Length: 328
Image (cartoon, rainbow, N blue to C red):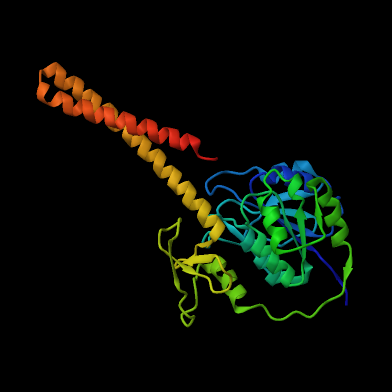
């Protein structure tokens, strides 16, 4: 018996709001599939994305809520600081471990949709940095679903589309303004069922971690230590035996090598700015103590404070020039 693909999962990050508006603008009022949108958001930041997408097109857009039904013709938007998963056609919100520093995370929702709905899923990757979403989109295709990707040349940030296409070659690559029409055509096509193997234990474990934070089963073989630490909790990262360059810490935070490299770069730069502030404050304190010593006639310590202030100013100027030379 044929079926239609009726679950559309869209993942985006930097530059994703404009791309999402372009997509939903082209979805008709009688769109026969449910849409689930995951945009990487700051945990504590309020979001007006449901209102933005509701005004952009003809479909109703609502915040995803725990236990809600996945409804055709409705755009369900992942809220800040929660992963969105599927239990059949019901939404489940969790606060499982972050992936690449994100919650909600695109990969989490893609994997969950692939497990719950298999070939009924269309995974869509839009603008964003690094390669978030590429692994999840690969899972969607492995479970019989379709991959659709924004043309990298059309994306404000092409990293996510480029990484998705490197992992999942697909002919469905279009600008955001065209994607809505393409998706509408795809969900109306009748599809012949294809036998699929059962999901792998690794995929089931990844989904379980996102749901309840369990890092691994007690009987699982211990993963080798990577020698790196988790940017989120500073615990040791363990290598994932399923895919090279993927790591998890013992509490479940997940990182790809590329995201880990970016996080370390951010951490390094933040530490340098902190050092710059400390140097400048140390120099100012030494200068004040020099003036106080001069006023009190303590000539024997004036030079010491003057030398300290001068060294701090010199070091701070050198560090500031280095920081300003770094690529954004």
